[in-house]
Length: 345
Image 1 (tube, rainbow, N blue to C red):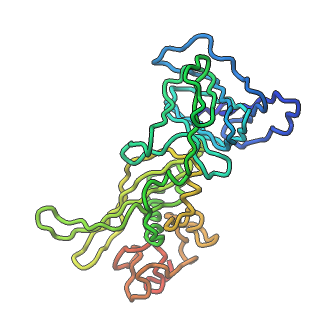
Image 2 (tube, rainbow, N blue to C red; image 1 turned 180 degrees about the vertical axis):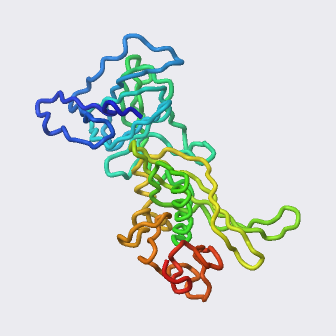
């Protein structure tokens, strides 16, 4: 991501420019600027770049649709641009590209609809007609209402918006077990802490339920596994959804030991999709909510020793410590959630 200059640059051309200017806190030092009113902005590139190169530098996005856009993201080779914007009908924004483009994401104000950039599943298949943003050959991109983009535009890239519910980004039926989601999210936070991941892991959402793991030759039960999606925000403003696999061993009597975390496919998503997913039944508490209402954080994001101990474990009060911490018999719930059996953590 660029750090020496603004990612989105605003310029005012209307008479009442003060009504449209506002500040955003971005990594760059300078604010971006919004161009309000008119259908101009960018006269088209005089020399078409080679197909293998694509456009570099300033690209103008012009909104000729009737839809108001409040979130824009562009992914390109080597970086991303992701910002909240005030991008109503007739307005333009300018984006600084440093590499070949690949995807464009646009979200309507209010966060209820995704206007462009269909979701893709874990195997790279689009959930509908693919909407890529590759081989950009013009420094002006014009956004049109659905079905209204001219086919023969030569001085700009014409993009027809395609409104869809933001819920389409969650393309599976989540398991509503928020307790289990909290347990796997705690294991994910611990892995992220150990490996110094840079993203902020907000919450997890289960992709299904536990599945048995058995030896392929003997059929002996060796453990169980479950998958979950982890949702994250990054310092440059973009958001991701990533699949993780969790496994737990079986000691011959019961499932025991810490959850082992495996990493799988990561997808860029509009940040409004992350906000939507956080409100679904089964979403784990986010990394701040897991602190127990303000208690100091331990290494996994759970309450630090001596504060915020709970009995929310599904096997609480059974006489056996099941939180995977010191002196525990099993690890079937998050650290600090089986305090009647384990004592204060």
